[in-house]
Length: 129
Image (cartoon, rainbow, N blue to C red; front, side, top):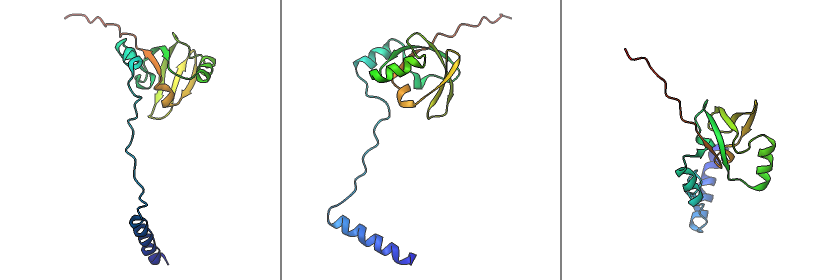
């Protein structure tokens, strides 16, 4: 029975191709948001998306590029401009953040639209020998 299935599948695929019904694969879109003037200005100001913030580093939330309904929810979670956040876990999917003594999970698409500033690392004075 299994041996007879493949010829039928190939026959149907051949008929669909000859009739012009072809499934075209769409090219994969760039996963980064399109660069507009506002994004260029944020990058020039030294800000970066929260999704690109290194794990374990403190950052200061500066700008939210999200819809009004999302802003309301972020404010409820304590994610207001000027707040310090730390990326606790970033495994490529949702991010786990430390915010005001609690943990908040955010999707990567939302983290791409939240802009943070990384404080400069303080210089370490090493004794000269």
